[in-house]
Length: 237
DNA sequence: CGCCAGGGCCTCA
DNA sequence: TGAGGCCATGGC
Image (cartoon, rainbow, N blue to C red; front, side, top):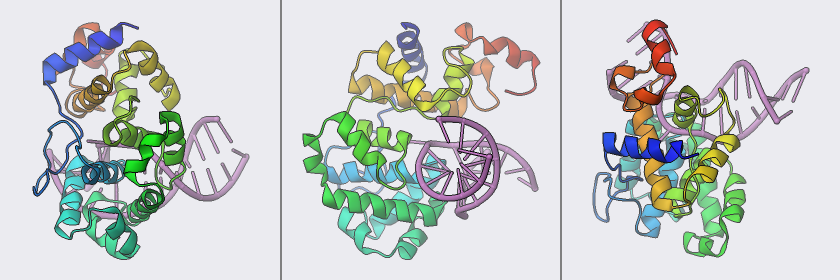
């Protein structure tokens, strides 16, 4: 479906390059959008962020990531060593902190058995299965890790993507994860840089424009969106 | 104030 | 296998 390429072009023109995934530069204090992780420590930070941002605003996650850096905990061994209850206190701002502390420890245990630099020997399908077997890593988190931390060409589907494409009439309401992902995989050239930027643009679009209550007046896709007419007359959705 | 964020697990039909 | 409850802080 050529529409998907056109939508990417329109979003890119409207919002500009996003530079995902945001990572903390070596020796730096804050996160920067500079094209993703360049070393294994930054790759680990991406994985941690992917877990912490589950159903949580990135702003709340940033604070937790900063605390982990301050406490010198942003590495596999430290996360493995620290008791879950203490870890939970440090990531408090990201919400669901007890659950997420367990998840981070499960992630660290997994990486202890399969260090990041050894993961390159597995193909993407194998890696995905391995990640999905880790407590706290579901389809979206696994694919975020594959794409942004491990540089694999796999498209990330999230709630924004589902909402945007349902409104555009390009996917059924309540379509499941696999259906949406197949649509992107079958319709786009399989390029990591495209997938990274596209997902980031969808998040940007979903966050500020195609919100639960959409701001169709500010939408760069309004021209081709069937929902634009309803939004002018109907109160919600 | 209430709503909702860059989901996933567990339980129960 | 799919719907529903649960996890929780912080910004608006």
